[in-house]
Length: 141
Image 1 (cartoon, rainbow, N blue to C red):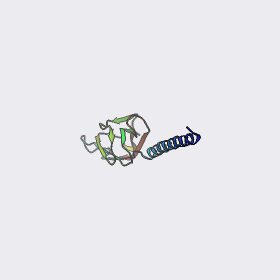
Image 2 (cartoon, rainbow, N blue to C red):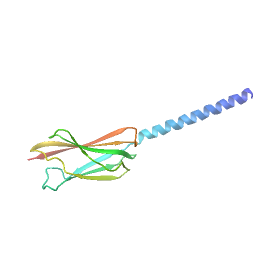
Image 3 (cartoon, rainbow, N blue to C red):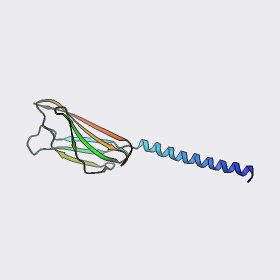
């Protein structure tokens, strides 16, 4: 091989490496901008009017990627601990709604907060975990 052939081969390899690096950087840049966004809409909150009433919690993914491994928990300002509500679905697609009906802990008289937390991941097994919170204030007379 001559020196001219060596230089053109080196330039071709360098161009290939630069193209591969550009593709990888573009992929991860796009991946960072795609994230699930969860809207939490609870209705029919306590105090309940009868013993059969339940709160309906609607979870909707309005983001730009699928939400994996959703977990729903409720934290009450008037009790200790956290209540986990099971979600059977492994993921929430874009613009998909999941509705759960659950009877929440009845509050004593006064002003209280109920906090609904939804944790989701961007990927099925690894990656970022996002937490979305909706806090509702209730008044019991």
